[in-house]
Length: 120
Image (cartoon, rainbow, N blue to C red; front, top):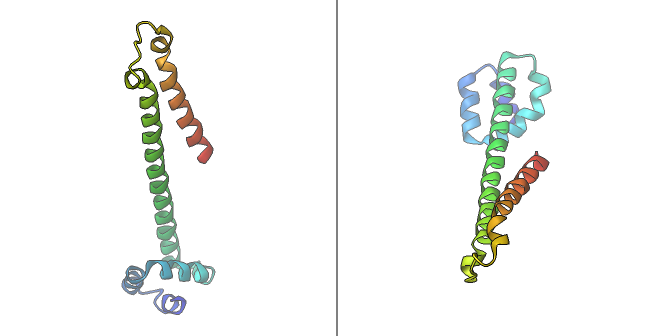
C-alpha cells in the first residue's frame, strides 16, 4: 500500500479509491510514509483528514460508553428509590427514607460525574 500511495500522491481520485478499498491498510501505510510526503499539499490534506476521522471515532466511542453508564446508574438509583414499594414497606411510618430519597439521586449523579471526569 505504501508504494501505491507514493505513486499516486498527485492523483487525488486514485488516493480516494485506495482509501475506500482498504481504510486500515491505507491509514497504516500513510502513517509510515508521511515523513517523506509531509511537504506535499496532498500529504498535508490526507494527514488532516485521517487525524480528524480518528478523533471523531474516539469521541463516538466515549459517548456510547457514557450513555451506557448513565443508564446503568439511573437504573440502580431507580431500584433503590423503589425499595419500599418492592418490599411493601409503609413509608408513612418510615419517614427517614421518604425525606432522604433525594440523596440517592444526588449520589447517582455524583458517581456518574466522578467517573466521567476520571475517564477523560
